[in-house]
Image (cartoon, rainbow, N blue to C red; front, side):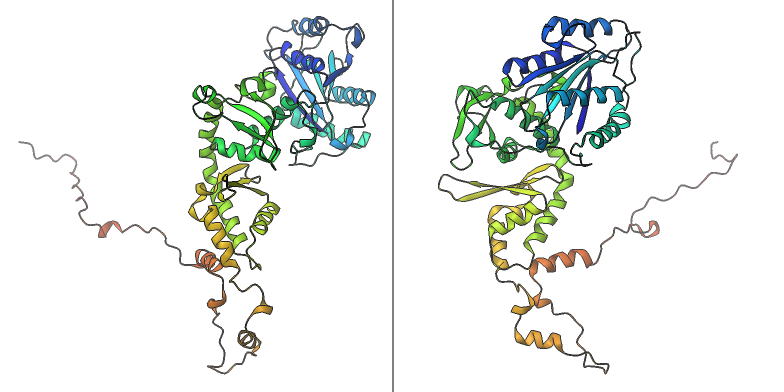
Amino acid sequence: MVAVINSGTSFRRPLNYNENKVKEGVASCIGASGYPKDVADLSFDNKLNVLVRQAAGNHRAERKAIHISLNFDPSEKGLTNEEMMIIAGDYMQGIGFGDQPYLVYRHKDAAHPHIHIVTTKIKADGLAIDTQHIGRDVSRPLSRRLEEKYGLVKAIKGESLYTLKPIDMEKVEYGKFPIRNTIQNILSHTLKNYRLGSLHELNALLGLYNVRATRGEEGSRVHKHRGLFYQVYNPETGKAIGRPIKSSRIFIDMPKRDSRFKNHPSLDYLSEKFVTGSIYKKKHKTALKNMIDLTLSGRTIGNSLQYFIDALKRQGVDTVLRRNAEGRLYGITYVDHNSKCVFNGSELGKAYGITVILNRLAANSAKVPSERHLPSAVKQHKELPDTDFPGSRTNSPDYSIIPPDISAILESLFGPEYLYEPLPYELRIGRKKRKKRRRKGYTDRP
C-alpha cells in the first residue's frame, strides 16, 4: 500500500475533483466519519460546510485542507467497500486524524484500486495537527504495519506499487472507455518523472503507452495557433482511435495541486519543460553511451538489431525506431528508465544514430564470437606450456584478435592519463617584474 498526502488552501477543489468522478460513474463516496448524517443523505454543501466550519476555528494556518490517497496493488481489486473503510479508519487513527471529519471516495479510473480521503488538519478546539514530515515519519511506517495486519501486498522501496501499462486497443471504444482519464494518468506520470528535450522525444515516451501528441497538419489552424492534441493510436496500424483531446481539456476538472502542473500540458508548457530537460540530460549522456558501446562490443554471433534492442531493454533502456512511409529506418530514440531521460540517437552523437548502429552490428558478425571458433593455430598457441628459460615465453597478448570496440574501451581505461601541469612561475616568459618594496620611512620625493 502506498499513501500520498497533499495539503491545500481550498476544500472545494478536492471535493469537486471527487464529486466530478462520481458524476462520471468512475467513483463513489463509500463512507464519512464525523458527519451528522449518513453518507447517502449528504449533499455537496453538507460535505463542504462541515469541513469549512471546523477549519474556521483557526485563523493562523494557511493550508487547512488535506487530501489523501491510499493506493493498493492491482491484484487487490477484490477488496470490498467495507474492508476499504476499515483500512481507511485504521490509517486515519494511526496518523492522528481519527477524530477529524473526513470523506472516503473509492475510484475505479485506474488499473489499481485506490481510495481518496478529504479532511482537515484543524481540530475541534482550533488547534492544528502537525503535518510536517508526516509522510516520512508517520505514514510510511504505519503503511507497513497495515500491510502486515491485513495481508496487503507490500510496497517495495524505490519501486512504484503499480506501473503504467499500454492502453489495450481492444478496450478502446469512444464513449465507453475512459480515454481522457487514462491519458491524464499517463501524462501525470511521464511529465512528472521524465526529462525531455523535444516534442518528438515526448512522443517516443508516450508511444510506449500507445498515446501520442500531435499539432495537426502544418498550416492548419491548430498548428498556426500552437495548439496540441493527445490521442490513442494503434502501434501496429499507426491509425488513431477515438477523437483527439485538446490539451486544454486534459486537466480541466483536476485540482491544480493534484495534477502537479502549473498549467495544462499545452505546447507552451512543454516548451518550458524541454528547456530545463535538455540541461538536466547532459550529465546522463555518458552513462548511456557507455552502455550502448558495451552492448555493441559483446562477443555475439550475428548482427541482429532485435538482439541489440532486447539487450538494452534488459538493462532498463527502451528503443523506439522511426520509419518513413516506405518502411525504411531513419532514426532511433533511447528511453532510459534508469536516469528517466529520453535521448535521440543524434543527440548522443553520430556513432549512436541508426545508420552507424546497423554498421556496427554488421561488423560484429566478423568478430571472433567464442574460443571454439578460433583458428587451430591460435588454440595451439594458447595451449603451449610456460617455461622458465629465456626466449621461450611469449607473454605479450595478441591484440589482433581483440575486437576493435573493446580495444578502444581498453585504451580509454588503461591508456596514459594527461594531466594539466602548469609551467613553474620562474620559467614563464614575459612575467612581470616584482616591484621593489620600499623601506619604511624612505621617500624619493624632494
